[in-house]
Length: 238
Image (cartoon, rainbow, N blue to C red):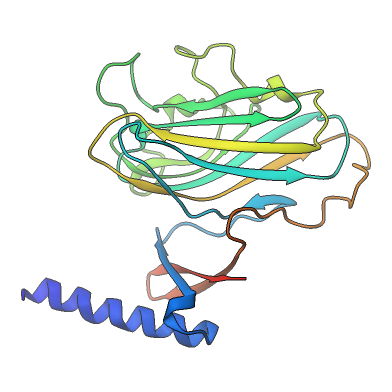
């Protein structure tokens, strides 16, 4: 065993032991996920933490749905997304709503048409906002690992010029909102960690006022533990 392997083995054992102690559960009931150290948990009225693997090379998709029970016509809509991935130029993100709108909110960042190979940086920690000064297509390198971070306009001006989050203005916020993330090339993998809808209905919203996060999938409770220079996501099944 090499020195590097031994160090990684010891660190991994310490991390798992800490996770079990943190949630006081048997190892079989604990999910452990190391997230990039600059990721901070998102918050908002409509958020989900699916921790869903993104199948490589168009072998499937990471699909997650947030169901909103509030009502009100959308005046503005933003979407925050956190993804760990080793080549973000492989990825596409599509938002669909049961009320009718559908938006390719980003499409293989840095890719020119369908040619190889897009942004080679790691990880996305972005908010898609049509009032942002720059476009998501130009976000490569804005993140700490060469990926994308910050606020950017949605869509793809070349491949999907008509798509932006403005397409959803006027829809009622209620219903199912689904984020589908696909990987269009082989060799790199990743995980959809968390995403949130951030909306302004211009009214009181009705329903429960948007005070309760909508979490789907296996129903995860997100705990964050600071470990030296990084952050660990510890997740406990309900």
